Image 1 (tube, rainbow, N blue to C red):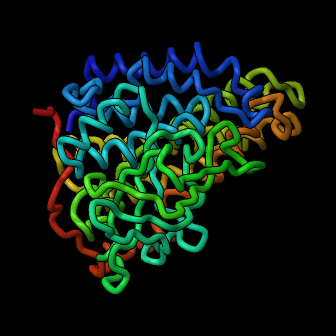
Image 2: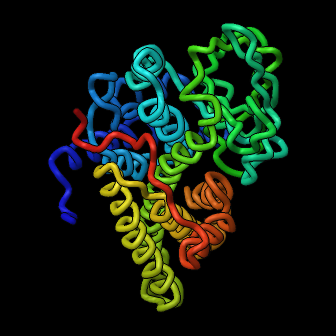
Length: 396
């Protein structure tokens, strides 16, 4: 495995970093205070190619590899988690699911405008009573001639109130348990679709998270993704992609904490010297360095596996679990280094702390990922061959 970034990797890193520096960083504190995500910023992300970075060019994307998605995620979260979450939802969970499981008509009709940034996608799996327990979803899809009638409620859905296309999971056969779940592309303007935003969140305040209500929504049979009963497989493969962006984004958050802490430790003085000369402060900074570098290796490994078209469920789970833990610890330590200043939004570290907490829950809780890792180690969990793998890179 070659750890050298290619010219394409370096170019997309600089593109993402320059975009954040120019379009995001000057406004982050104001947007966070207002809990506001300006739609024009999303349009600019699309124009820069960030919303389709690893989608093949024939489907409107930049055609870069999957490691490039991790690099973009790292840079976006180095600015603010909300923009990495947007990439996770739109690209990781929705667009890559369509690339892997959609038919050609669906790819041309939905994936292409999403990759170009003309339309925004969301992923509707979680419900008020079903998070980690996916099989406990209550949304149903009843086959009625040329359509399915969808009824149900989705909760804690990223981009729920702003997305154009919703990838919704519903039971077509409850008796079959998780094998009776199917996936559907639902357009926002379909009759019976309504959404709302969740306000007053601890973190991720810039981003949009909300609920989706479906009442007798008529969805064409042509909008079913895969076959009836494929929904669970589609959801789990999509979560591998989403977790990849979370793991790589966490590295960017650690980097942001490290940069802020080093700068503050050099200028803040106590007992006649900069606090960076105190060993306990140095310990916290050293731990951030370790978390950043270990985390980068973990997500680069996942990116490499994805480029080969190989399944990476265990590896991406480990990366998500480890990197999010280290990001939260880095944010906590960054506040401690900043002292009282870190407790207000005068400095960005309090925002990093609030944002880091959410990643310990979404895309699989820390506890779920511990169980996944133990299951592999004990031999209780064995991956089956993927019937429809994500396309390997370079794309045909």
